[in-house]
Figure (cartoon, one colour):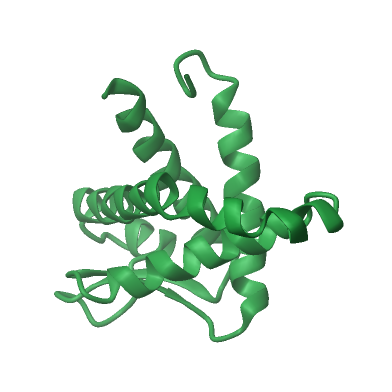
Length: 141
């Protein structure tokens, strides 16, 4: 249970960094009309609300990665082998897009540009941050 909470925290941090770097990725709440981003925090936005929004999307992303991703990886194993593992980036982008779709039914929304490349770049950023965070003791068991 403790490692899942650590993963949710890492996912929230990775999503924050990805949305900070990529202009086509935002997290917003239904209570606000503008996107919750790093600029919102520095301009006096509700910091606790922003942190909770990223943690909530990190929770959804963690659940999608725990339940859907293993099945998709198994079904796409031949393509992954043919591309020498590069198809994993596409799988990660698809999991991020699925998270965005699922979050559209919640008060906190993850929005990604209609361009597939935004999801791919976000998946690369999130994977790199997760890899670095897994080096932290207790980050991945």
